Image (cartoon, rainbow, N blue to C red; front, side):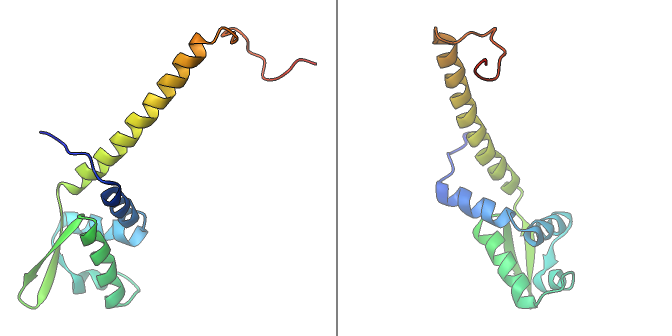
Length: 124
C-alpha cells in the first residue's frame, strides 16, 4: 500500500476534530454502530444544532460520513480515519527522530564535549 503524505490542511482538520471530547465520543459511538444525528443528540446536554456542528467538523476532517436513510442522516465512522491520524503522527515522529539523531551525531563529532562529564554546570 502506497501512502501519500498528508497535507498540512488535512492534518490540521484531523487534529482539530480530534481535539474535542464530544467529537471523540461521537466517533467512539459511531464505531460501535451507525447512529442518526438525532439519536446522537439524545446522548448530550446540548442542542441538536450543536451536535450537528460537531458531526460536520468530523465529516470535514474525513473521520465520519453521513448517509441519508429516510428522514434521518446516519453517521458512520470512516475505517481509514484512524490510519490517517496514525500516518500524521508517524510523519511527525520520523521528523523529530531525524532531528534528534542529527543532534546526537553533531555532539559526538564535537571534540569539545566530554561524554564522561556528568557535571550539570560550571564548577565553583
